Length: 305
Image (cartoon, rainbow, N blue to C red; front, top):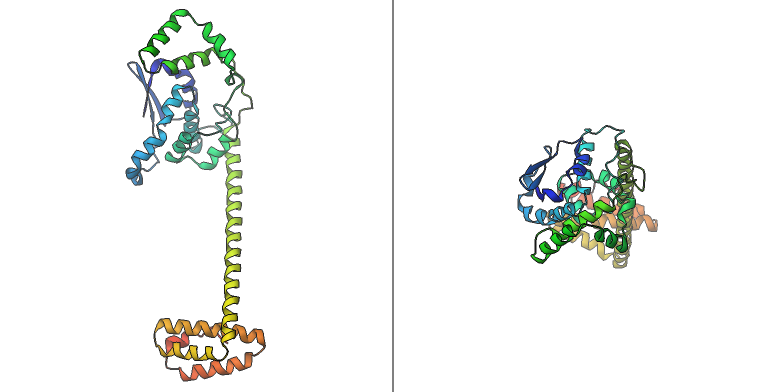
């Protein structure tokens, strides 16, 4: 819920964003206008401990609205797009919302708006031809205002009156904005935004899959390198490693059995490398026979030839 001074809120412009959504309600209460935003399917159960941080993240939205930045309402329009409340051929309410502010990103996350849809919307900027006013244009616009308006604003500024500078900015923007402002870029339809969101999702999934595959390759390469180092160390021990196998088996516990089996797996790999597999099999068979009663240890050797 956001409370705005009614005289500074352009209700007509705001309403143009809200015709196809029931998630936002504008109510005039005295000198104020209340903006109420809700989303029925949203669950807040796990956010109780985070209320303060969310409020801090969303707080700048009020100042943005007072400054004439209505991209918040574009995001509420996207909420309606998600629920199929917007016709596929309906145009977006402004030509994009990029670049997003931290507060707008927090709003999209808080209300669970599909991040791919938000990214698609943000690929185009919201600026129109009239938004790039030069200082000289602003100076001329203020100079042309009635003296009574300028005096009133100066007095309220002197008295630290709230919203005086914001009101001045709003008045200047209103006079600089052409009556039939033309978007810099063509408006996209809800269907086009959905299609672009799907493309973004697929691209992200491909990138994530490629990254996961690359990480697996690196892990496998690191594991193989470690294995080769371990095999070289075992090879350098010569016959003494067979004594280590026997000592681990005699411990008669899972840890000892695991270590003995691991050593035997490495000895098999060395035998394959050196062409001594037959000799390895004979020694392995001897171990099986001597320790046949140790069923849990024998189970660990099932993958050895």
